[in-house]
Amino acid sequence: MTQRAIEVDTLRKEFKSYSSRSGLAGAFRDLFTRNYKVVPAVNDISFTVNQGEMVGYIGENGAGKSTTIKMLTGILTPTSGKIIVNGMNPHKQREQFVQTIGVVFGQRSQLWWDIAVQESFRLLKKVYKVTDEQYDDHMNHVIKTLDIEPLLDKPVRKLSLGQRMRCELAAALIHNPPLLFLDEPTIGLDVLVKLKIREFLKEINEKYNTTILLTTHNLTDIEALCDRVIMLDEGSIIYDGALKHLKENLGDGKELQFQFLEKVDLQAVKALTTGMPVKWALDEKEHIFTANVEDHDELVSMLIAKIVANYKIKDIKINETSTEEIIRNIYEKGAVEVG
Image 1 (cartoon, rainbow, N blue to C red):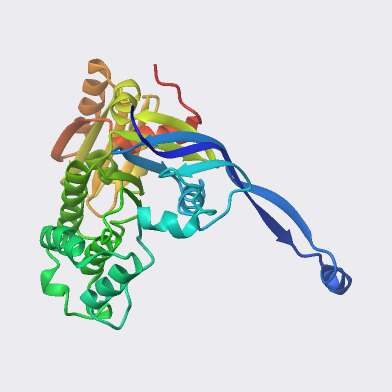
Image 2 (cartoon, helix red, strand yellow):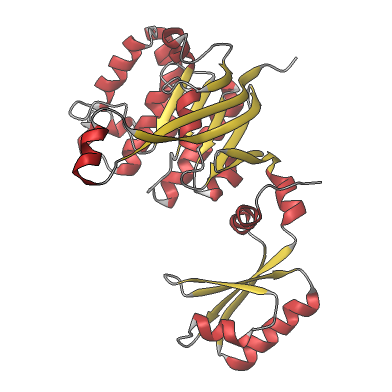
């Protein structure tokens, strides 16, 4: 029987949003009674994650991702609903529970700022009651794979962001937890560090059957690591399923990328293709104009012919619609059904 790492049933989290009354009399009344409205951040969601799964938990800012992670890790108490993580209630069995999870928040550190990285590791080893034998057996591999041996004697404040994030990831794994929560773990990192972290996460998933729940805005991370995505919008789940099904069923378009030899205005390109079912976007940094169209050969040919007839072209690429574009379309339309 497949073991469940996470079970969430009709989970809800509400916050009180206070408002101030106007004027001096209003301020006086606020001293005694406050006006507030209840705002649901997470809205009766249900899902399960099996042991060994790598799941992408995605959504726009304010969708409820971080609130969910905080409830799953025991930081926040739910308003209602049920959570079982690693067979425990996260906020009621806190001391026992934290021994079974690892957490990496991209914007927060679990390492001590002014002491050497390995001293932080030693302190965490004591916190998690890890024996010398367990530590050596597991952490030697982690340190080597993440290539952080040269960093162990340095204080955390002297590390670059990429170096610190690799050390943060190692710190979260000192007790070799069966479940790892990653909240924006590659934010602000360069491409090589991102690749190293992705390869490492795949390796620990294969070697230890570590369950990973990953929240990120970087869809390349999701595509590289996760077979399944849970998509959140305004506190509700709008899609839970295989990433490949999402792409197969909704990725039925083409993405045409144009680079021009001369300076071209986005509005002029849009005006040129008025009446055609095409959505334009511009990457100003790379000067790449992207047209998203339905996958019809005639339409693609007409679009290319119209652009080529009016502008000098440096390069054209034709790609399948990106995951990013598919997800953007889902948010515009709301909940999605995949057949």
